[in-house]
Image 1: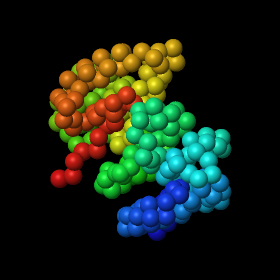
Image 2: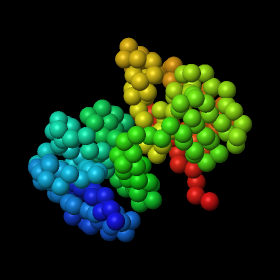
Image 3: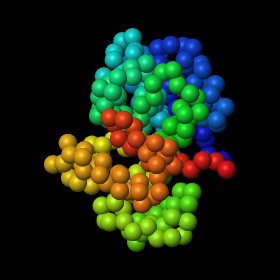
Length: 231
């Protein structure tokens, strides 16, 4: 029997750490805690957690400083948990190497869904070449997709965009990441390209931007491919 994934929670508020510990352990995860950036870095090095949940307001250093130090030697996924709701703070954290960002106060169901998405990505180093997501099937080898068994007629770039989002479902994928991967480093500021292709892809998926089944917009940040709702 495999041991449970261990999650390092770095937050200076003991009640928050206890709250997260109870919720995460109820889901079967192991939890380790730190109250400062220095303790967090030491724990990350010693315990090799599968995921770090990091508050930005730490007493001995800003959480972004800890994140940058951590990124100097570890690829561990980092989920930011912060009261800072400004778009600029979110972008700065994501650019510094965080994989996701949740604003306090937060819903526990959403938080746990973000945790599952990050751990799933880490556990699956090689994404399967065929994905089935609700009624949608995507075959990377054939560059083909179908909805309820009916082929979707996608351009090469539309398929690449669909695959990049769907293979990271549940996770935020920033505009910069998409533009760099699909359009190239020279186009990281050309967000209008991306908006056009997202709109075209939504039309072909029968998706509604206001009430999405598949592609959710994270305003000012990027996009998130949604997990199908439980039956």
